[in-house]
Image (cartoon, rainbow, N blue to C red; front, side):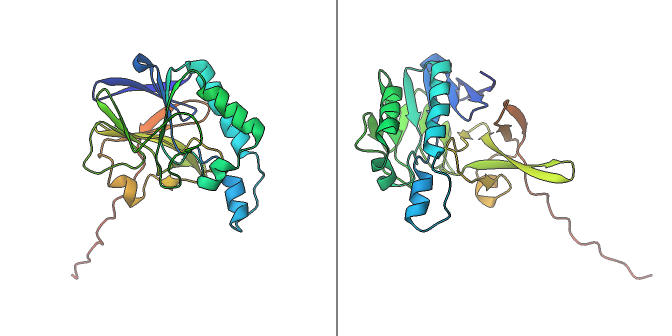
Length: 233
């Protein structure tokens, strides 16, 4: 599987092109912000009507990652469902597919801001997970180190000729990694946003997801130049 290898506090990790984080030595896969049931939740609350296929698509991609990486342990890093009712609204085929992914694996559901974790499903429900040198939580803490988080759905805005495109990305520096949203139909926050720029070190990188994992310097807002003062002759 195409991935960018890096080390965080001695842990040798892989940022996969799919948006999953892989820790081979621990047999661990981490995904964040699945937001299963998003289309249903938006329709229920009177929002725009989206094709109701995002749950199936997200579960299919997750199944492909788990089949390829064969982890013994999975951490779902918060906002696994778009809200509590979305967790209860899975169809029987979707519930069976998710149960098959959980079967035979240690599975930690981390609490997010959209949901408290799908309490009716198997697995362990935690506020955060500590494993080796790393702490896994939904929302980054500014003073934390050795931290793996999600929540922000980071996206890098790139110039492509005359157009600009946005790509979901990991953000990585010496203290933390912030995962992209794994779920279909999830928006994103530009890496130039103050919330992300303030969390990440000046030398942070963005690892773009998609067909391949590609590392670039984290895009940031250009510094504003002070106005030029004219000196009268």
